[in-house]
Length: 371
Image (cartoon, rainbow, N blue to C red):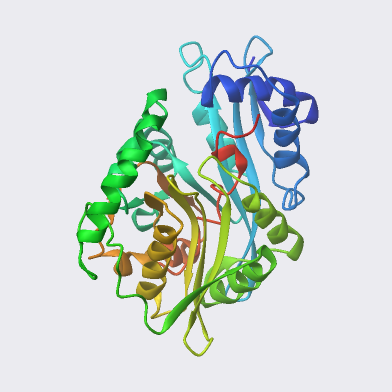
């Protein structure tokens, strides 16, 4: 008979194999690095001592055939401390023999001791299950965005994973993009690129900072949200250490945006090297400065040689992104479940902070570079 129970250290070998089969290459070999990371991330990392547990589904055969990864996020709402549970990896094998295993896992997770449950990677199938269990999708948190900077380089980069020879086209793409961008006038708005000569941000400047300085910036700028993360210093430092590691897109860049007088306007962090599509993990802005911070991000990525920049939306940033030739697509949904209508209302009104550092995309499990 099937059962659902908490993840244990003895489950890690089976979990590692399932993770590779479902999310990577079915025939890939489990490495010690992957197994060690899964154990640390789900059982030992800061935030995993909040009384919230990942769950495994044991099938009739006695073998693990399902898993739901859970990480804890302390939050605060109008002075009230809360426990949020973030649902990351949800995977089930052998659906033909046990088609309800995924639904049972999700139901068991949502029945946990947390005040609210969140996920930013719900597929259409997962979102449907959340809705049936009285969860809600958050449309303004659920869009991925893309701004093309160097169009020829962007399309060559898209072909890199499918055609190994595509890298040979990089020099030609670079020359074509240089000609195109030089011909564009400052202030030109095109879907096909960003001009090389730009008007600049005038009274704003970007200063690259270290992870510790970005932690202070993050804490200060999320304080304006009614419902927001309430990281311990240890947990926030852990998240930023993870982010600081290079990703497939390139090295991490932490930035502070200042006015000409040195006053804080916002900040951002992304991974991206020259010739790559930069992946933004977080954009933060003082209310009223969102547009300038987004402009500074795009210019900074352009100056570093990125062919494009992409990220995930947040309600406070959507207005600032309109009219900047940014494309939006729905790839996965951000969903919430809570029995407290005040918490649901706060998120639906754009007063709850989620995604980015307060989410799951910062984890190395969201990338393909755990060997």
